[in-house]
Length: 380
Image (cartoon, rainbow, N blue to C red; front, top):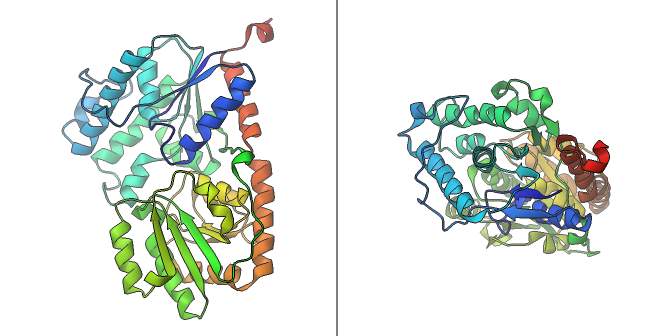
């Protein structure tokens, strides 16, 4: 079976999807299933000229809005690039972004389409203050889910909570299959170490949706309680300068290291003690599973896929979002008690190894692909 994995970002870009799909490709190739990756390069901008139309709603009603126009132009660019680059047929196309899915179905309507909806662009825009809930952009982006439902032979998503998020925007959410993300264990090498001062780490894009302002305020309270720590922030984004100013205002600047973007943070994480990320929303939160496989204690917010990964008090600690005091209390538990922190990290590693293995994802995807397009031997 010849399969195309259609991404939006190139696979070298940061993020759970981009870091997972190349390993899926490698495993399937070893099984004798040829698999190729396809994505839109960043340099392709403003090339596409074809009109965009959907079956389930009229795009014309949304044109003229800057954010929507940019989305539609990206769609046109993806059409242009796909026509230019793809010259062969595939048995199945598995898309990982709404634009790549809809473009592929438009250009290759007879090829079965699998779509994994990994996250919510509109929710991220709302949390980052770019759009308002119920506004034109929100209505357009949520209408796209119905278009995907009408076009894809199978829709997948990484968490049950995100399937529930999608329910108001599709006709039959129960048809959406949950396949949590999986990770190649070979990428993660826990290291036995003893840090004199507890090392906290967070890895994310520096945007309001990730709640790092809440983390800094929690850390200021933790410092006021007399606990020593260093917070390592890996990632970049539009909020970096604002977060650096906040760190100075909270008298935390000497306790924090801002690294900027790092291509393979999992190579760095095993040297730390606690992973913390107080996201305001998260469809899955791949970085929690990655941190668990690095043998770190986990602290996160009780939202979306994070709450499905962390069993509070067993393999990590959950707090409500927007609550620096609660986050400080959770951090105090893991910072002040080494044995508690160790046991929590060990439990997190055990769960991640079993629940989020790449082999499990391969088996589930193989079943999905063969159900949609049975191999000749299986059909006989």
